[in-house]
Image 1 (cartoon, one colour):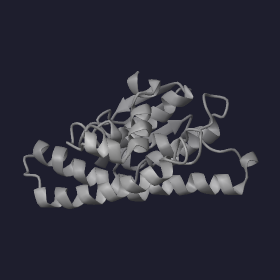
Image 2 (cartoon, helix red, strand yellow):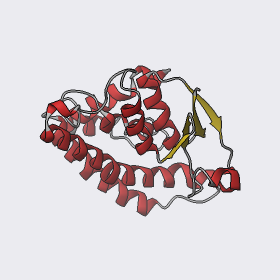
Image 3 (tube, helix red, strand yellow):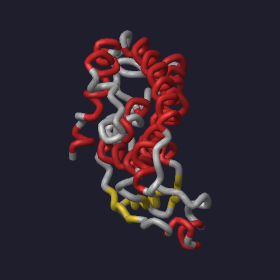
Image 4 (cartoon, helix red, strand yellow):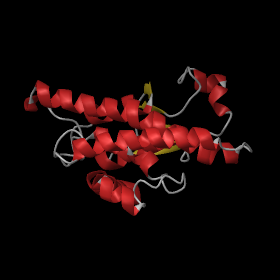
Length: 212
């Protein structure tokens, strides 16, 4: 049975799962869930919080995009790259990976998604972006990216010299930087300030799993 992914292509959380499916070369079928369908009883029995995405892997139901990604890596080890440090690398390397995952989930994602909500979602639903809030969030993001520069100036990726889920989880929002008017990788001054971040981000968004 082909794995089924329930979500929407426009959803960055759905995109996160699709990205890992492509990286791992796992066959899948996308079942589009339209706006408003999340609350239908037949959906709530699989996703009790009325959100997307979730997967059905031969009867096994799982939701939350990051948890799904971890499952795909563990359940399909013979497909594609590992994307997670194996136990053989030792507890310290695994801890660094978990650290990098936390950086994405609790430093990068909340700040960037809030900016994108102001810049992209509010105009879409007829609301006016809060420019003062955007300025505050942008300053906060600059602080975050300075931290990324300190990490990435010492290693190719966030958890070492091999790409992992921690890096790939950034991609759906990185691809929206242009639309969201986030100039971290187009502003010459910022690129000079954070060259390692620019190198890392540009490499990620040019991966085959993103372009296909």
